[in-house]
Image (cartoon, rainbow over all chains, first blue to last red; front, side, top):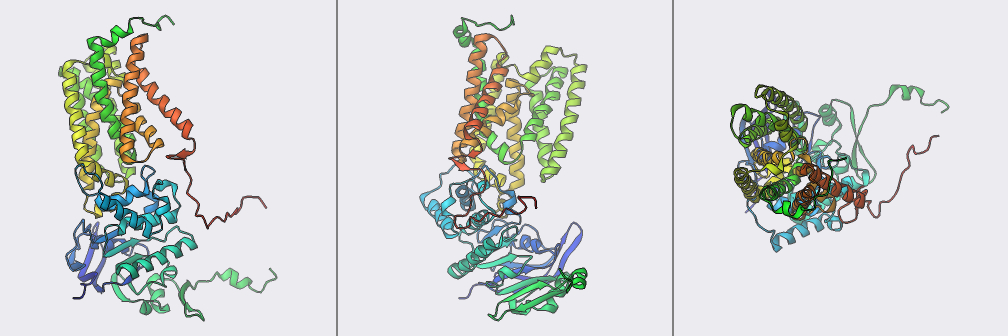
Length: 269
Length: 300
C-alpha cells in the first residue's frame, strides 16, 4: 500500500482580507519529498502552510493533506512558524517546550508519563539539543532555538513537517547544520518536509521538489526543473543566475551588478 | 514620627477577629495571584493586570454611588474590562493601545462616580491602597468562591494555557483554542484582581500579581516550581506584612508590598545577570564554534 500524497491542491484559491492571495492551485506533493516553497515576499508561501494546517479555509477548490481534508490540530503535521526564535520566551525551558508539542493540547491535571518523557528526550537528542534541554529558550543561540523548535515539531512523530523560514537569521554554519538535520530526518523517518525559504542555495543539497508561487498561482515541479535562470528570473522579478560548479553543485545568485562598480573596474584601486 | 510605635500587644492584635479575616482573605488572594502571575508574565499581560486594577476603581466608586456592595462593582468592572481587553486585537501592540484607552476612560469614570457619590476621601483611599484590616465575613465568602474558581479553572486549563501563552502559533495549529483560552484567562485575572484590590488596593496590586511570579522565574523555569515558589512568596509577603502591621500599626499594604519587592530585589541581587540554575543569560556559545569577530570593535 502506498502512502497518499502529502498535499493535494485541486482548483484551490485563497482570499484574505478581500484580496486574492493566489488562485488556480493544482498540484500534488508526493509523500517523502523535500520541498522548497519559494516565491517573492507576499506571494502567499505562509498562506499555503495555513491552508494545510486548517487554519485558513480555501475560498474555493479542494485540499487534501496526507489523504484527508485539512483540520486544525492534525497531529500528523509538525509546524515551525516563521520568526519562531524571535518570539521565544525566557519563562520556558527547552524540554518543557518540546513536551508541549506532545501534550500541550490536553486539558486537565495529568503528570507527564515516563513514556512521554522518553519521547521528548529522544526528539531532543535527535536534533542534537540534548545538552541544553534544561536551559531556557532565551539562553540559546538562534541555531539552538531552531533545533528545539524542530524537536517540538517531530516529537509526536509527524508525517509532514512544515518549516517556515527555518534558516532566517542563522549564520552559514548553523544553516548548513539545520539543512543536514533535515536531510537526516528525511532519510530516517521517511517524513515529507516542506520548507519556506528565501535563499534556495543552502537547501539545494536536500531538496527534491519545489513549490513556487508564480504570477499568483502555485506550481509544483522537481527541483531540477525549477533551478533554471529563466524561471527564477521571472519568479523573483530580478535577474537570477544559475551556476554549476565543476563538482556538480548548483547554486543561484542575483545577477544584478552595480553599474558604478562596473564602470570603475580596472581603476587603480 | 509620633505615628510609628511598637505595639507590645501585637500577639493579641494578630489573634483578634479582624486580623483573622485579614489573614484568611490575604492568603486566598496570595494563592490566586501567585498562580496567575506566571501566566501574566508569559503572556506579557502585565500592563493588562495593571489596567484591570484601575478599571476596578470606577466599579468600586460606582457601587458606592448605587449603594451596592463594593465587591459587586469591582467584579462587574474588572470582568467586563477584562473581556473588552481580551476581545481586542491579538497583536500585543493593538492590545496595549486598547488597554491604555480603556484604562484612561475607567479612571475618568472613577473620578466622576466618586464625585457624584460624594464618597469621602477615606473610601477612595481604601480603594486605591486597599483595606485588608476591614475585610468582612461576607467578603471572605466571595474570596473563597473566587479563589476556588481560579484554582479549579487553572487545574483544567493550565497545560493548554501554557502552550497558548508561550507558543501561540504552534498551539493554534495543534488545535488549542488560543482565543477562548485568552478570554478565559482574562476573566480569571479579573476575579483575582477583584480580590487583590481589596487587599492591597489598585495602585499596589502589581506587587502581589506580578512581582512574586517574576521573583520565582528568576530562581527556576520549571512550571510547577514557579507556581509553588510564587505562591509561597505571595503568602510570605501577606503574612509578614500583617505581623509587621500588628507590631507597629502602619498600613499592612505598605509592608506586604515592601516584603514582595524586597524578595525580588534580593533574588535579583543573588542571581545578577544569571538566570535559573546558574545558566548565563546570554546565548550559550557553541562549543566548537567559539570564533569571536570583533568587527568594528576598534576605530580605524
